[in-house]
Image (tube, rainbow, N blue to C red):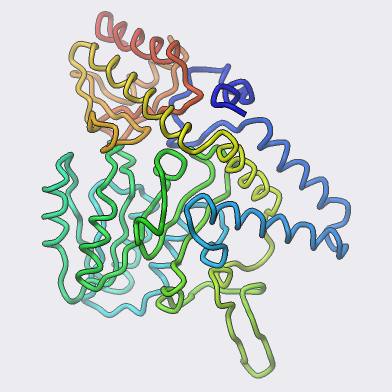
Length: 385
C-alpha cells in the first residue's frame, strides 16, 4: 500500500475538498470493512465461548497495535472511546486538596477544559493557564513560572487545536519533572499527524483518539499510563473486567495494568477498525506519512500566503507545526467564510477558535484541493461572501 491508495480507498473524499481531519476524518473502506467483518463475526452468537474469545483476541490485538504505534507496552494501554476518557481518568484519580492547582494552556479543546473546570468547582482547585505563542523560549519560561508546591498535574495539548502549534513537548516534560509534577498530553491533534514516541517524550500519561489523523472509527481512542505511574492514579470509575481478584466481603485487587480502567460491555468491532487503520499506516510507513503531510502542509501555507489580507497564525517551519493551518482573513468572519467556501467551492474547513479559520491537511488532500481553497478565498476577497 502507498500514500496514493488512501484517497482511492476513501470514497467520501469525492464529496468535497476535505480539510477537517482535525475534527473527524473520513474512513478508508478497509477500516469500515474490518469493523463490519468483526461485527458479523460477533453476531454469530456473542455468548458462544469461541466467539467471545475471538472478540477478546481482537481487543488485545488492537491494544498491541496502539502500543506499537506510540512505543509503549500493551500493559500501558487502555482502549476507550475518545481522548477525553483519559483526561477524566487523571482528573478524577487524584486525591485533591483545596488549594491545589493544575496547569493547562490557553488553547485547549473543551474536552481538556470542561473536565478541569468541573474539578476546580468541585474540589476547590486552582486553574493555571500557560499562554502559548510561536516562540518556544517564551513558552518554556512562562511554563516554568507557573509551578509551586501545590501543583499536582499538567494537562496540555501536544499540538494546539487552535493554531496547529507543535509544543516543545520533551522540554515541557523535563520542566514538569524537575518540579516533581506528572504531565498528561492531550494527543488528539498529534497522533497520526506527527511522530508520537512516549518513551522519547518521557511523559507520564498520553491520551488520544482514533477518529482524527489515524482515520479510525468514531468512538475509538487510547490512554497511555507509564507502568510506574499506575499506582499514582486512584481509579474512580471501575467495573467488571478491570479486576484481577474479586472475592466475597469486599475483596478486590485491580489488574496491574492499564486494563484496570476498562470495564463493562464495549464496542469491540470498532476497535478492530481502529487497529486496521494503524496497520495501514504501518504498511505504508510512518516516515512516508509524516513526510507527505509535512510537504503538503508546507505547500498549503505557501499558497495561503498569496491571498491578500490573509495572515497565517500557525508557525511556518513545519517542525514547530503539524497538519493544522490556522489563518485570519482581514474583515471576514470565520463562520461565514467557512460556509461560503463550502457553498461555492465545496471546500470543507472549520473555525479554529471563533476568530480564525482552521484548515487541517492530510496526505489524501491534493493540490487541486488546495487550489480550490485559494480560489475561494480570492473570490471572497474580491466579491465578498
